[in-house]
Length: 91
Image 1 (cartoon, one colour):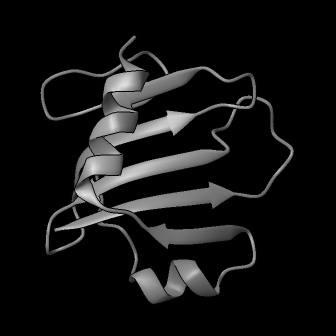
Image 2 (cartoon, rainbow, N blue to C red):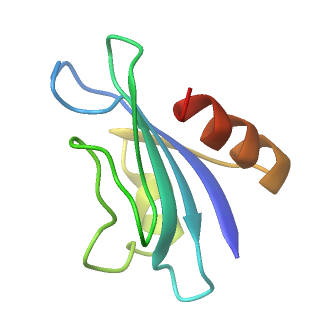
Image 3 (tube, one colour):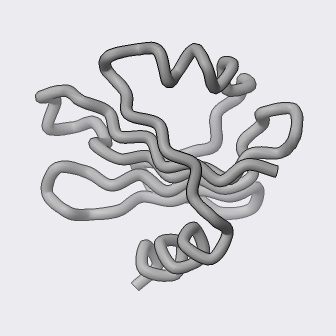
């Protein structure tokens, strides 16, 4: 199980600037939170999602590939931090 925070360095107002992901051992998303430039959040799990956010239909690429891309800043976080952001995204 992996818990990630991925900062996406771009200037698109409609796209998330931070993605939090809970991934299984095969790199499939279990839950995801997206933070947008205006401070709003979208979230998704296997049963629910917001209008702007859904689980990916494909596996995450290898984490080393994400980390080596200059558009992204990948950080491993613990489950407690992910749960805090998950709860915050629902309020």
